[in-house]
Amino acid sequence: MPDLVLASTSPYRRQLLERLRVPFTCEAPGVDEAQVKATIADPRAVVVELARRKALAVARRRPGAIVIGSDQGACLDGALLDKPGTAANAEAQLQRLQSRTHELLTAVAFAQDGRVVAEFVDTTRLTMRAFGADEIARYVAAESPLDCAGSYKIEALGIALFDRIECSDWTAIVGLPLLRLCAALRPLGVALP
Image (cartoon, rainbow, N blue to C red; front, side, top):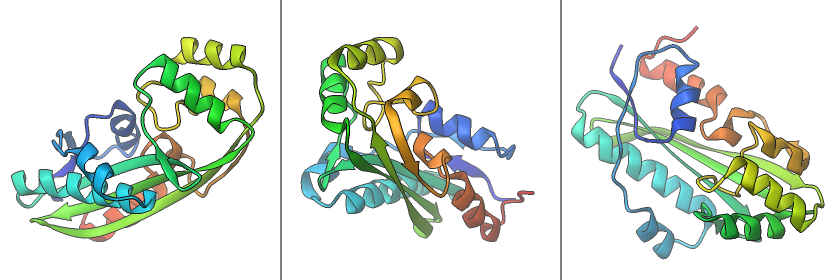
């Protein structure tokens, strides 16, 4: 089996990939995400390009390895919502999202020997319920979702913010769609049950 590398420092993606019980390592891709977001307007194209760049950056350093690159973005009204970074930004994002449906786009690219060998995008539609500013402040203080697209951690307390979720694979919401990931890894020589 070829070496498997996750081109990410995300603890969420690492934990998801660990569920498959295959040996892998993690490596920071060192991709300038801001540059890509500044030059590409379409949210889907942004996450695809970032997933590709992450996978290729690490694949260049790891000949023969299968490298998984992934990127995720919350999309509202045709625009990406960045990771909030601060509590004030998280509260503002949640205020914008409440009572509305948005999409969570998760792109995954697989690179080997300097080229992309497979890729896909998973789309999840999420509808938040109505809530007040006090609920938003309590949630942000309790969970500090400052590094999460959309300002929520749906795998934890963030689930309480939603009325409806439409998806084919709930692991995509956390950051790595395991169903399609497994389907893509098998033909690349990764033994999975």
